[in-house]
Length: 268
Image (cartoon, rainbow, N blue to C red; front, side, top):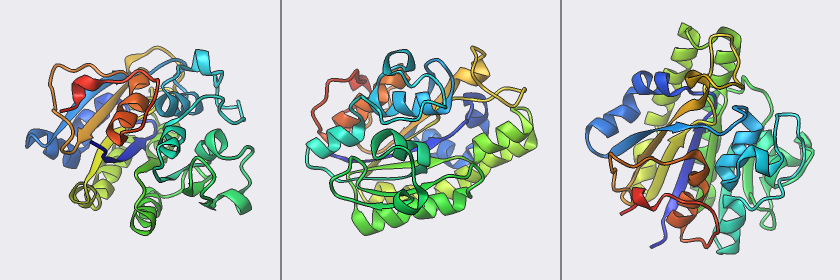
C-alpha cells in the first residue's frame, strides 16, 4: 500500500532534550498514537554528511560527503530520486544544502530559493540560507507546499535548534526553548497532516554538546530522536531502527522500489 510521507528534520536536536522538551509529540506517544526511538547518528556527526545519510541511506564514509564544506551534487540515489522514478511528487522546505545535494550545486538564491521544476528530483521547494531563518516561516513554507502541490514526499527541515545550540550550547535555556518552540509549531500542523493521510517521521541529523558544537563521539552529539506517527506504523516498542534505514523505510511507505537498508519491523 502506498502512503504519503512527511519527514521532519529538527536540525541539531539531541535525544536527551527531545525526550523531555517536546510535549506535543510526547502526548501522541503517551496516547499510543506514536512512538519514540533512540537513534545513534552516523559519523561524522555533522549536518551535510547526515542529510545525505538520512536521505540516501549511505554513511558519510561511503558517500564522500564527509564534512560540511563538500559542496557538490550527491552521487547517490535519494528518497527524492526513488519517489520520482515511481511517478510520485516531491517537495522540500529546507536549508539550501539539501538543494545543493539533490537539485543544483552551487546554490544560487535567485534561481533556487523557490523551486518549481518537474524535472528535478526535488520538484517544489522553498530553500533558505540563513541559520536563524525563523522556524515559524519554515513550517509555513512547508505547509504552503503541501496545500498547493499535495506532494507524496515532503521534507521539512528546520534550523533554529541547531542555531541556538551553536550560540549557547546543549545545557542552555536557549537551546531547550528552541526545541520547545519547534514542538509548539509542529502542534499547529501535525494533526492536519495525519488527517490528510500522511505518515510522519520526526528526527534529527545530530545532537549538540556543551562546547556549542558537534563532530565527536559523545552521546549528546550522536543520540537523536525518531518519532513515528501514522496508521502505517505498528509502534513496536522493541524495534531498533538505524539512521541509515530511514531512506529505505520511507521508500517502503511510499511504495517506491529501492535498494537501501530499511526497517520493516516498524510497519504494519
